[in-house]
Image 1 (cartoon, rainbow, N blue to C red):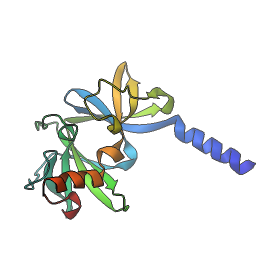
Image 2 (image 1 turned 120 degrees about the vertical axis):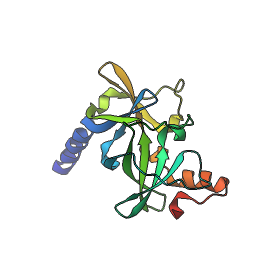
Image 3 (image 1 turned 60 degrees about the horizontal axis):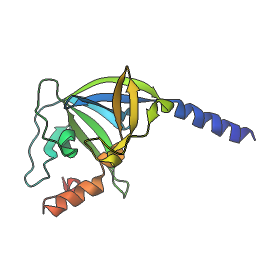
Image 4 (image 1 turned 180 degrees about the vertical axis):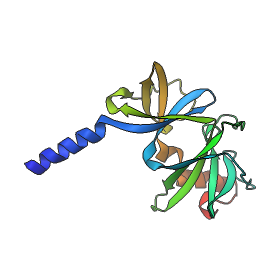
Length: 177
């Protein structure tokens, strides 16, 4: 009985709150769980790769590793991000269905802060009104009187889906980079 109680307490603690990085895209606030984030870097030299989908901005050299950079706004089907001095790249670790890890950079307008958001403050996303695909949204949180869209990063960064999109255009897949 003790092990069951410990498991319930641990699960309850894990569900109480999580930390999220808030970021801005086109004036809208989004949040992503910090667990998959490796680092945040200034937007620098990104080398374009021919024949990639519009949302693939190119690749950058991160300490000798080739990291694809995705324009998050374009991934959502919106116009490409206009790079400004506040633009940055959030480096995340994504994995494909065969569990291979790949670092991916997300170009965003700016990052705001890391917030602890209690799980009970994250509500299901409405099935209408969002300008991004519903499967990209984990939920909606109200932070300081403003709604924040909590992203389901594993869906946004689905390596398999992005490879299929790249293959549809006869372009090299992200995993080949």
